[in-house]
Amino acid sequence: MTPGPLVRRAVRSRAAVRAAYAAQGLGYAVVVTSLPAFKERQGLDDTAVSLIVLLVCAAAAGGSGLADLVAKRWGSRAALCAGLVIEAAAVTVITTDAALPVFVAAFGVYGVGLGAVDASAAMQGVFVQRRAGRDLMGGFFASYTAAAIVGALAVAGTAAAGLGGAALAVAIVVAAGAAAWGWYSFDPARAAAVTDAGAGARPTASLPRRGIWLFGFVILAAFTLDSAVSTWSTVYLADALSAAAAIAPLGYAAYQVAILVTRLAADRLVRRFGPRPIVIGATAASLAGLVLVAVLPSAPAAIVGFALAGVAVGALVPLAFTSAGELAPARSDEIIARVNLFNYGGAVLGAVALGLLAGAPGLGQAFLLPGMLLLPVLLIVRRFRAAGAASVDR
Image (tube, rainbow, N blue to C red; front, side):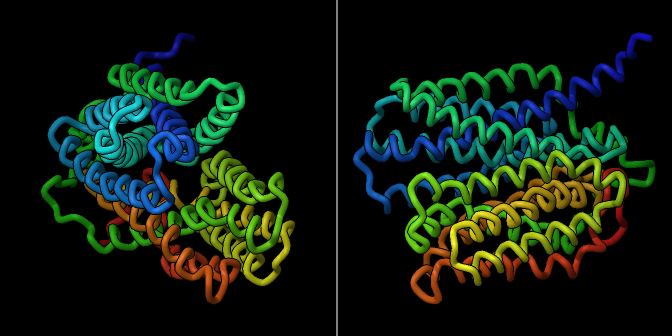
């Protein structure tokens, strides 16, 4: 039997959202792993690079708010496509031999696109999985992680082959292609989500502020951990544990693999056990991993610990966005945009706070900081919901 138009559209929408997440992961990984080349080309020092990263995080917060405004008026499809186009345009400028002010401004514009895509891709993902009636966010985020790994490898491969910015050119094409295809494939305006929310839903109802803060905190904790491991795991293995140059990056590699595996399994596990056991298990695994890093100063233990740390990031991020979107389905776009803002606070906190703690008590023990932020997640586990399980709690 030939699938009906509604089935084909649902399949196309899921594929388009996966493509958007993959474009985002590929582009971000290519940009951040190209920073050493940018640093050399522009004659920047480490402080300047840190300030550019901070600029991107601040601009991304603004981009998340922009996505909310666009989604209110034209729908999250428009916000997501616009964000992808902004990213492609900004990276195009970044790849050129532009003057330093233009180069820095392009990174600011890239941050706006980054935040817009982060927020609107989650809006689309929550909407599509609500239509499907089952959890899909883990798979969407898995596309992001897999593409990020590919992006990092692409930068390494093209650099070794002397192809310069070839990986950046690919990222531009992928982002632009995802935007063009997505315009015809993403689900349309936010008004459709309001209709799906139920006869009793009122778009003018107050936002569930308590739920936004609770799930925002979960996102803050997860991205503090993500930023900490991404920024400092290789430094810790190389400097504090004197690991060989070939061994030091393995902590981050193990961490990313654990995130990917967790996200690939998350949707199926949630459908079988529900979200709460997954939250408890993933948080406990990551806490154990961070304690292992802190108390056992050896390279093998650190690599295993960083891998365990990735389990919480892999599970908590898609589950937090899913649960936040179910707080008030009629206003899920606005809720997602606000929860997404905590992403960038965590990114800055993880990178900066661990650096400040590196001297005393030491970088290994500093990894307990994201663990302390994970502990309260166990106290709000009852607030997590599966797709379609709307909550009336505020």
